[in-house]
Amino acid sequence: MWNTPLLPPECFEFPDPGPAIAHNDGLVAVSADLQPDRLLAAYRQGIFPWFAEQGYFFWFVVAPRTVLLPPHLHIGRSLAKTLRHKAYRVTVNHDFEAVIAACAAVPRPGQDGTWIAPEFQAAYTALHHLGHAHSFECWYPDRQGGWQLAGGFYGVQIGRVFYGESMFAAAADASKIAFACAVPFLAGCGIELIDCQQDTRHLARFGSEPMDFSAFQAALRRLNALPLEAVILPGTVRENPCAAGQAT
Image 1 (cartoon, one colour):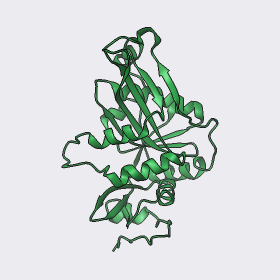
Image 2: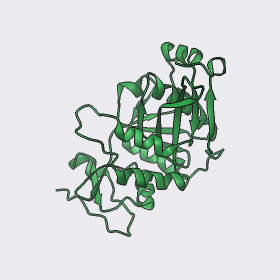
Image 3: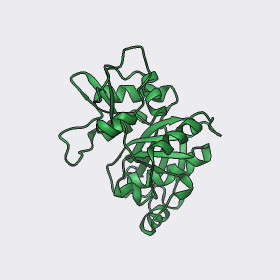
């Protein structure tokens, strides 16, 4: 029988997730905090916090794991046309807090609320300030000649792995554009594996694929220890110059 452990406050070690996969629906552990060191230790083992309840945070694994290898990125015909003809700008780390707040506000089918509670937003923002969490923003031009945040996503980066967390779209195609532009950018920085956590039709269209959890953990052990080829700094990832300044 598997008993879910309560992690001590200053101990950031997690138990082997194997028994949790086999006997506990993937629930590995419970903690009373989301300290940055605990988050980083969890991600290195393929573990992530899924939700909070009564002041406790619940840490899970999903097996098999859904991943995207950047060379396998697929851009469908419709999205390729949008990328050529729509006015947009994609940035990195331009407004992390706005992105995570927008992700928290997105209604999720079958859910009564959001897992991205204020404690989660604060924890991932702290990781962002430490250089381990990054946001990608998609902006559409507005009628005043400026740019309006239309969609985006954020995730955690350790070594050459990017762990995707959540995305939002306030306007059509915005999250797709952000993701399509971000993957080649991340690959250029040295990212070799993007963790998508769970299989979805949306990510499958981009070329995501299942990976056995033991193979996933082996990849994490290797790639988390490797440095990036280029630091992920705030800037513009891609802009459609032919349509810039046009109102949608």
